Length: 287
Image (tube, rainbow, N blue to C red; front, top):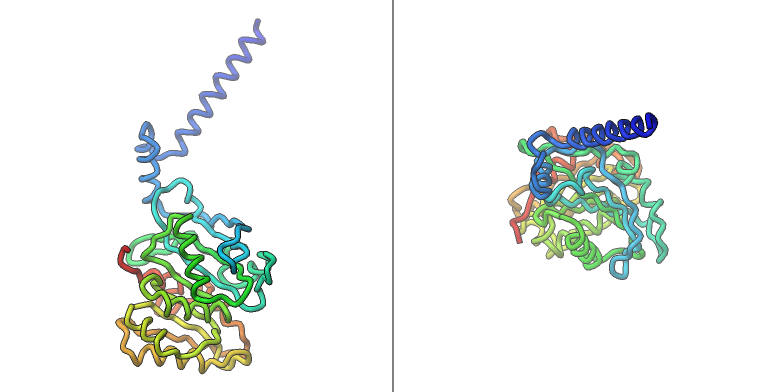
């Protein structure tokens, strides 16, 4: 009899403790609120933990084998939409039809995600923002239509702020950033092409300039793989068309091809901003 009473007492204490713990996890004004209201209050809390990294093997269209997604840590607890940053790899990480997503994790933004070094949030103009970051793996050199197909898929499957879609990439991925910005100038808010092989196409540069796409390009001055004069020619062409905000070019003093490690480093800043804070200044009107 004493044993059963003791067991009942222990169970009661455990239930009480669990109940208290559950309430402690919520803010005081959240208790007894419906779940939708709780989620709304969560929307206003800034992220403090590193993004959750997920490896997604789903194919998107005919040219994406899969992708790595970095979601805000509290994504499932909120209802709001988030800025989308797509970071595109170089030629050396093409999948050739077979997903090898581990190779995509070794460079730039995706490496930061993997090492949990990508910041949980960025504050711009007094407001906190957290990104949905997606690093796709392409089978073949991506056309603008391939990138656009990926964007449409992500908008349909994640809570994306359609006015804040950004594309960055290295080498081939930087060229893809130039291409998508010219082809979808009403959709892309800003791009960061890094060491990108491309050219100053008249129509593309005109679209970027006239539609207010933010541009911050990076290149190493003496890059032996892709000459830095390529980025300079494109940026100069855009600026000759008098965009509302001048396109930027940062030339880093190096003969190496790797300009992306520094460009994507959150600690690298110009005029007090890293590339992520800079991108967040740009947005498109709701469509």
